Structures are given as C-alpha cells and as structure tokens.
Image (cartoon, rainbow, N blue to C red; front, side, top):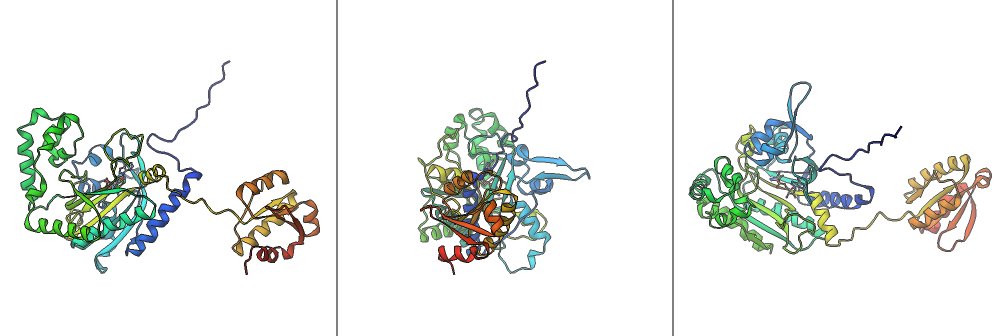
Length: 436
Ligand code: HAM
C-alpha cells in the first residue's frame, strides 16, 4: 500500500514566524521605542487584541478599506461581535475613556507595540498579521504636538540606523472646511466619470477623498488635475498647517507638501503625514514602485467624541515594524548579536550535570554571562560549542571532577587548563574576568 504523505502545516497566509535569528532586530526596535517614548513623555499602554467590532466601524470608518474588506470579525460564543484589531488608535481611545484618563493632566501621551490584523492581499511589506508601534497624544490641539509625533518617529528611525527617509504632509481640513473640498472633488470627478476605474466610481459615492489614493494607471491623468484640499482650508486649518510647517523648518526636518495624501482612515482632521524611504531607497522586491510607508498618522480631533467622549483633540501615528526591519536589512544596518558568554559549562555524567546546574545558578547570580549545552554527550562536542560561542573560559566537570569536588577551568584561547576546588570556582573566575 502506498504510504500516505504526512501533512506539514504552514503558518496562515500573510503571517510568519519571528525566528531566533531575527530576534536581535525586534529586541533593538523594542528597546529604542521604549527608551525614546519614555524620553518624550509617553507612557506605555497595552490594549486587548480583540475589541468590539463597533469601535472600528465607528472609529476607523464604515467606508474605509479596513472596515469594508480587511477586518477579521467574528461572533463569540457569548454572542458578542468582536474584531481582531486592524489598528491601534480606536482601542487606545476606548481605553482612555473607559479608564477615566479624562481626569489626568492633559495631554495624555500613550504608546503601544503589538500585533495588528488585516485581511489584505499579502505581498512584500504587507502582511495579515503585522506589528505596529504607535503614539497617541490625547487632549492637545497645538500644532507643536503634531510635530512632536513626527520628530519622535524620525528620532527612532535615526537611532535604528536608518537614513534617507522622507516626510510627506498634507492637511485634510476640519468639519468646517472639508465639505467644501469634498464637494469640489465630487463635482470634478463626476464630470470625468467615464475616465476613472470602477473602484473610483464606487469611491465617488462612498468615500470621495480616497479617489486621490488611487494607484490605477487609468485614473492618474484625472487625479493630476483634481482639486487640492489646501485650497479649501478655513482660516484656522490654514494657520494650523502653517505652524506645523514652521516647526518642521525650525527642526530642519525636510518635508514634501503632498496635496494628494489623504490616508485610508476616516478619523483624520487637519494634519496627515506619512514617512517613506527616499526614492531609490525603496526596498527591492516590492511589487509596486510606490514608496512603502514606514509609518503614518495625523490629527484626529473628532474621534474621542465619536467613541462617546467629550470633544477632545488628538494626534498620533503608527509604524510598521516589519517594514522597518526590511529597510534596516536593505540599508545594511548592523545590529549587534547578543554578547558572547564569558563562561561555558561542560559536563559529563549525571553527577557532573547535577553539580553544573548549581554552578550555573551561582555564576548567574554573580552576573557572569554563562552558557551550557546540557544534552550534548561528549566533552569534545561541548568544547566545540563553547568555541563557536566565543566563550573566554570553559568549566569542565567530568565524572572524576564531580567525585573529587573539583572543576577544570580551561582558557579557551590558550588551551591552558587548571583544576580548582568547586568551592573556589566563582572567585577564581571573577579574578580571571577582572570582576570584583
Ligand atoms: P496606517 O497607515 O493604517 O495607520 O498604518 C500605519 C503603518 O502600519 C503603515 O505606515 C505601515 O508601516 C504599517 N502597516 C499597515 N498595514 C500593514 C500591513 N498589512 N502589513 C505591514 N505593515 C502594515 C494606522 O494604523 C493608524 N492607527 C495610525 C495612527 C495612529 N493615526 C493616528 N494615530
């Protein structure tokens, strides 16, 4: 009988494993984000991965691609409508309202780091489970806060060793002036309806601002002549943008005023921005030549009210961790691996193993970086590993040493060995490693 082939499972499409050899990038990004967020006055918040579906429908927006096509939504056994969060902002605002943050001194500055889920067409830089870190400043309307978010993100990228990134910025106006722009856009596109793609015909009805997001070849000539939001800004929005740009100038942050930047989420008001690699620095292997966005955000002065709070201005952004790692690799950023252990424990036989576990703990307590390979059967194979890891010394506990209560200290560079009593091994090692 032919043998049945065993099925090998694979990670679901658009998801991936973060393997041990990749962890150094993740650790570095986590560390830099944590340290700099703290320096800029942000406190960490972790919200659940599942939220009430309604907060995304109301918050992110009914007509957005995220809500229309990309949410992993389900009904729980108890009958609740839940969604795996496709983005972090609505959950953070829900937590802000639910936990009485409203009574804290404002603005409240929060940051997060965690997985998001979007049912997207997987391709380079686009996953179905991906990680974001993000910042939200809630309860401040000053333009300087918009700039602080951008400044912090650029600082993080710089500390990660990434160069050559570009800021694109626009203003989408507010409920006062946006309707005028929207009307102009709809009028303009309606009279050119037969020259746009079917998707844009839909956008024209549901979410006209997204017309400016279209990447279809066919729509580009129409898009090029479309009205710009900047020409419709009210006095207040105009001044807000002016101040934001002045702050950016002051900080010598180069930017590109992009009047077709609209962003894919409904809650934005006034400032929107995106940070991309400079053209030419675009990651190879991308299906599209559009620069990928490393991070993006903007002001969302209406979201707190939409989700049930008092009118509260806010601004924030989020960044894609996978995309940042990809660019770090592309730009050849060196991330140092975990430092080599100073000492490697080699042991043979059960008694040797037992004693070495104890020594392991003692050395660890003395903060001596130590490694072992308990399951390897021979001294030779263990010494090979010690060599590979770059340990300075090996401690050898064979059958005889275990019985005698002694240990061999081997200098891995010179090969010189010395036998010392177990009781003295810590002090001997400390002496050799120059530790007090
Ligand atoms: P977003 O533009 O949807 O904004 O996502 C922010 C970043 O997440 C993107 O710039 C990109 O780097 C990354 N990203 C998005 N989708 C994927 C994906 N499928 N695979 C890999 N990376 C992805 C937001 O999520 C807003 N919550 C940002 C914000 C915070 N606005 C105000 N506060």
